[in-house]
Length: 213
Image 1 (cartoon, helix red, strand yellow):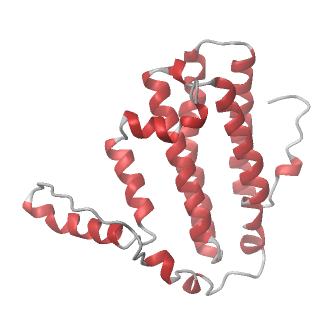
Image 2: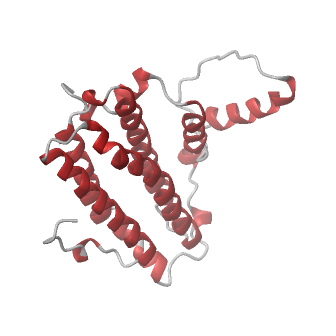
């Protein structure tokens, strides 16, 4: 980490979360060094892999805390996490297939903006609910109609062939997606993790950090 960097202003007061944030800062500084020194792409592989693991493990810990403490903006916060996860998954896919497509400066800017904006403007609001007297019974008020049922979604018919024993699983998944329940994002992340994303999907999600993007 840069010797003159002071992490104190970025602490939100939750030790577990602060420790995760500090590890992310360290990795971003490593990436910055690799960019400044024009190191080969393979020297960035560890940082890209770290980011991929980070968005899964750290976000899961944050979301568990928010859920346990009844954070009233849990659904909104989780949606932000969901988007960031997909972008990082996309960056990792593109980097593994063709690292020269990634604009290093744009990637560094994305990560630094994410750190500053997300930590200072989003994560800091969790602290009173984790360390304070808030949260009991609030979660029950959280699922509003627009979060659980969405009548405005354009539906398409999809036909698939699956083993007969798994037909009910597909029906349950279809219900979740059709009604845009809070679990829809979880289902999408599971699908991406298990089956990956297409090149086109990845390039669209990571467009802001691609060369020429």
